[in-house]
Picture 1: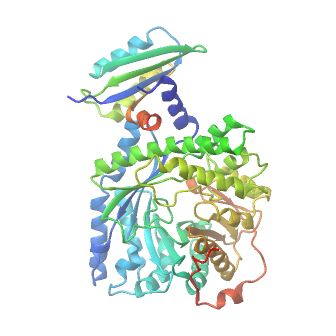
Picture 2 (picture 1 turned 30 degrees about the horizontal axis):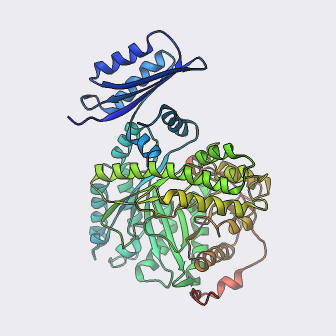
Length: 92
Length: 452
């Protein structure tokens, strides 16, 4: 199956188990993680993941809500967006 | 792979700088709905709009959610109704506006444009009937927008139409007086109207267009403003360069959304309109961009030059980012819809005469301006004539959307609500233009050669 790439971004206060939690949630939705980069900026945890959503059967809007709710419980802002928008804006 | 920094930069543009797609507008031709029987014609119009635009709102919302970019409006534009209904066995075209309204409601869009007539040279039967129906149509409907083209560089200005539009605007204001003349916010008088404009209230689907088409209007004054804060005090070369780069990025996003919407709806892509369209939200203002260039208040000396640079740089940056650019493409300066313009008008620095000068170098014209309720129809006609003359001579689109608010005068503020914002009532000259407007006839088309 052709991959459909999306970008997951996580921003918020650093705490134990952010990566594990997000990865678990994604795995449950059959979303494959292709790349992760993560850093702490001024005490804030900032993570960017490239994922493949081709196998995920949950509608995108529901997925967005799921991640947002997961983040809100932990004081994190979590987004998922199709990769195309970033490519369009930053690549010629 | 795009870097993390760029990804967070995009997210910040959307989150904090009001970057959005202002509108996805589906243009639908109604030329094949023509019938001598008015009821049949209206039924065909309703069916065609509902069929074509059935999934428009859903697709818009899907794109919003998948790409994480807000799409503020989903709209429909149709063939000017004067052309479609002119041959019908009726003299009353107001029911056609009700049909458009019902179709808009059914599709879930927030505006439908095209209750329009093109009368730059004269009136055909359909035009005549349509003009007569405008005040009632705008008073009775919620979503319908109307526009009338009264002049063009090739045809000159139809001063009979200009005179009538002054009276029609007054009557529309009267009929919607209980809503502070809201009907006038949905009525635009054009010179050199374009056929593929996705922005309301002036959108209609031109006769040269395909059967249906997707046009997209991008926005982003906040992003430009933010980018300019990084070049404080720098020479204009750098300012222009920064605006161009920003406009390029904004437009690329518009182009991507347009392509995606076109593919999902099975409707050809028309154009991306490269406009900087402000909203009343703080940080989404064109006026504040001009002030960022070094003007104390928008409207002071230097404003026209600042706007000329902004308008040109937006186009230069955007043109390369899109396959097809069209519509109005430029900076909009609607007073009530721009937080900085509202403040400038309230301070008294921004006046009608300066706004008129600004329209010489930017997109469209005197837009969303509230004037005193006792402004005579002839004065409004004369304002239209001035604006049309600027468009005619400079081969550009100009427009007038003024609201003579009954019972209100200079110093009052009119709350239009939502994206229409709030309009401080601005003063007009008290001296009469009545004898000028009463002449009627046509102002001949201007010479476009012998430029030495």
